[in-house]
Length: 195
Image (tube, rainbow, N blue to C red):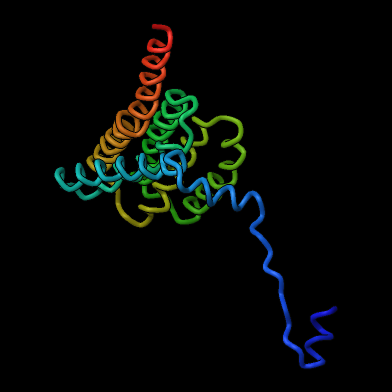
């Protein structure tokens, strides 16, 4: 109300600068820690390896290695072996399912019904069973990216191999070093403290 009155009177309006909310300030401060950058670093390293393999091994759909890495590498390291195993299992099953559908060149109405059905159950499955979620999410991606292109058994085999490579990269580079090294450091510091 004071701002309106001062505006009408021709006096300059003074607006007090409000400080950042505590959550936002904490988030900004956390950007200066290694923990805040751990996931982007893990993902960038995995994607670099995936793209290098894709360039060296020239095949038409080598980008699936990177797509699989993005699907499999998760933000959290808790449950570091269970979650990637669920993602890998679901991703491999999903690639197989989506590829088989594309091999049969379904009519558009069937394709749209399938995409809508997969998209509808996706949020429910994410909360209930992550393996089934990845099994549904992956064919959804496969169908959306490859709709209108004819699939061959060679393309299915390449996609499955790319998926296996992406899963291996995610596990060997995106998870194991990031969980094993801190455990070794803790063990060494515990031994040093006990000696």
